[in-house]
Length: 162
Image (cartoon, rainbow, N blue to C red; front, top):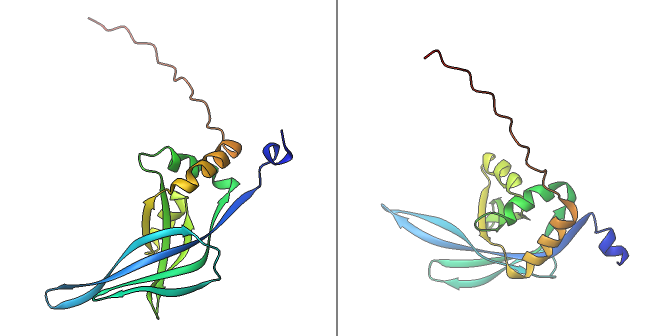
């Protein structure tokens, strides 16, 4: 076995870009932006934002320089994510005065997503990309061991008075 296989890294990082789509909607005379996640891709570009699509009422903003990081201490939450019905990559966004919305964290940690949702951050979810599934699974298998289930002891039945 190689040294790397015996001692996997404490954390693993992937540089990514996030593309957010802003479509203008109208309801009862009011116009408002409706945001969605268009893409999360591997990307080594410097940090920044580029407008990649401009059509009537729809604009895409590609945010580069973000990083998906796996931390050993969160391996259990990654395991729950991997074993869920739909393993997901989560993008946590905050308001931005210039663009309206800006991604600031890309994660697999559902607990972190829940914490941020309580602070009213905008959260987007996308199915875990194929290029990432094997890597995350290898990381989780190296750093997490589910605790064995314990058998519950049943209380003896009491004799009835009948």
